[in-house]
Length: 170
Image 1 (cartoon, rainbow, N blue to C red):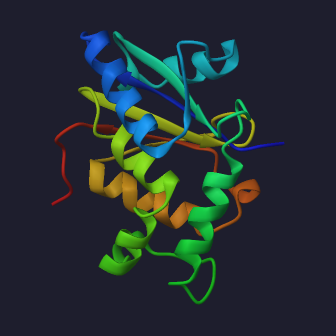
Image 2 (cartoon, rainbow, N blue to C red):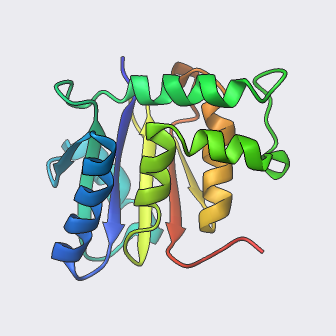
């Protein structure tokens, strides 16, 4: 199996949402597929109450390898693990250095970019399907992603991370 990265940004201005998604992906050199999710992935996102309403569905993958984002996770995992003595990670204990190193990876920049688009955004990092939903402010979502990435992707909790734009942890 492989790691899939897909999601939905919610908002009524679909052209603006698409332009923002393209901007994030073009800057990172990743492949962006719009509104072509498989029926199971789309259904799982639609089941997330926080992602209800108009919006744009997307998938992000390595160029020439549709549906596969495993390398993005692996690169980010190596980066995060250098800051940890084990796979254990406490989101409240993430250092500013770990944050900046994570955001130097493709997965870090894609997650932070996508979660800042639209009125609500969700990004799933899964092998198979979504098993858990994590709804929190922007900073908290990113901290949870960093800790989840500390483990190999095939041990991922298969979460969709959902946040409202402009919500910040206090």
